[in-house]
Length: 169
Image 1 (cartoon, rainbow, N blue to C red):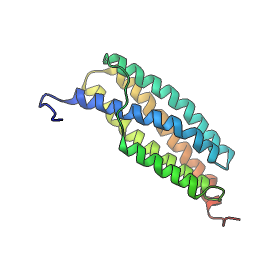
Image 2: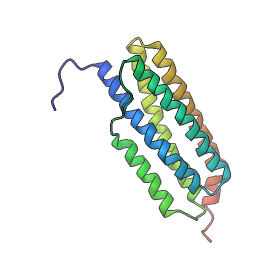
Image 3: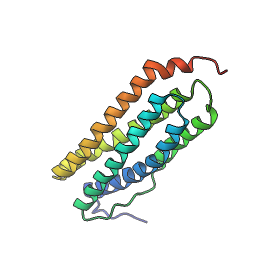
């Protein structure tokens, strides 16, 4: 379907919201599986904590959709589908090995980096569109995603990567 020449930043913003809404919903489904697959309690707890945060992030996105008088709807996001598929492959291929947690943390960080890129862009667009309340909500989520990424990096560097060096029993 051809796009009209009148589409602009508002349209990009709405498409971006749909994309990240879809992504957050997919992530909500993946996080419990990742938590269950983790061998280390701290890694599992990090995924559980992020699942709770993600529920709040979805609520914030619903608020931004309401500001636009749009129903919260996702749009298929092949990028997040691929990142989550890679995480699923890690869960299958490394189940029961010392490398499982390092692999899960790496997969989760790929998700976080994708989300941070999307939220950073959406924050900038909300500001350009003179939507300070939307920008504030999106920035709160960006800050959570950044904090989660830092937590994951710390888990990897303090323990998970070292355990991955061990040979499987």
